Image (cartoon, rainbow, N blue to C red; front, side):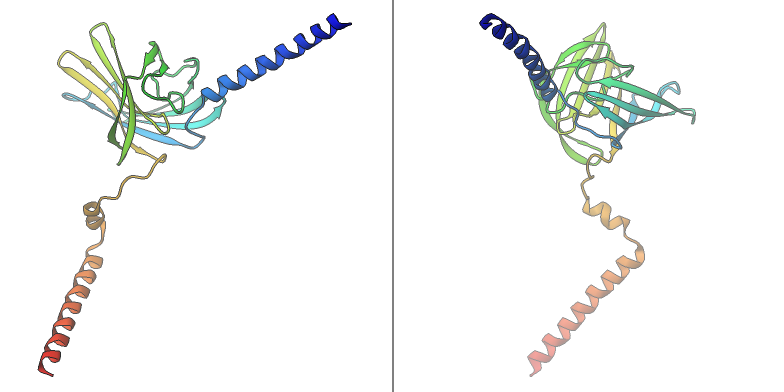
Length: 226
């Protein structure tokens, strides 16, 4: 009877341990975006951009299930046409049909190993800051070499969404860089804000200031005479 109890305890404990292990793995690997989040990239290249390359790419999150993200990719081509594709990427296993690593696991930091589409494991080399989509962001980055090509990746540390991917081959270079998103607010530039105001509003403001100066001068003059 005692041996049977031990056997029962073992068979009861193993599933619990496996469940706990699975929970810990899931807790370590998570996604930093949600359905409805989007980010847009613009293509830059030395020389004239080839029409076969998308000049702008918008990635919108359709759903998140566990560590698997489904994205709607809208690609604006150089010839004016537009193409849409649905891409799936699992940030934990690198499975799916995504053609580039638009996401890495949330809370990734320098020294962590992430899985990159088509290239396997890649170690995050460091952390820096940069301006993307109108705001200063903390960035984790990594690079890899393939044949005579150098790839450089930059992901947003808070959301772990791709901010920039660049390719250098000899004297040629090309990059996709984040220029718009709803994941964060663009910083307000006072000069840009002032230039966006209508001429009428600016005129009213200047007139109000001028009137205030004249009134203050008159009050000061009358006070001196008295």
